[in-house]
Length: 172
Image (cartoon, rainbow, N blue to C red; front, side, top):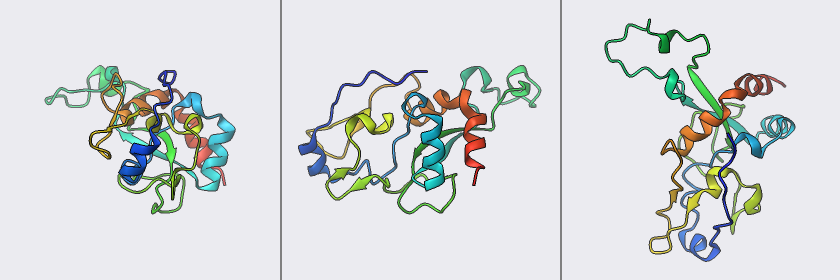
């Protein structure tokens, strides 16, 4: 799954008026085509990147919505069904040490005194995809992604890379 085609929509004036509300809430997710395996490994080792996750399998064909299912339907018994789908994002400034981060709130480690410390092109796709709200700074929204949730979109994009992510997270 390739990244979304994003033109630089950065609006520094609006972002400065906002004070980085989105950046103080939760770091945006990277998509697989934004980082090499080496970058993921080094980011996890340094503590700058973490593996967050989507609870359950984000793939529609692996999600059972049958309230009466006893766990034996083809969707539930698929050999490749995921209990969690990991994806990569920057660490929250107040996160516990380690490669996994279950926190759902917290300031992005990349947020500096004047905004993001990364160039627009180097930022996670989840950050590049924010729609700046000039009328009400701080009330920004993701571009519409097919899943309507960028976290879900990122988890879905990283599904083919789960073994690699877990291997890199277990390296010292």
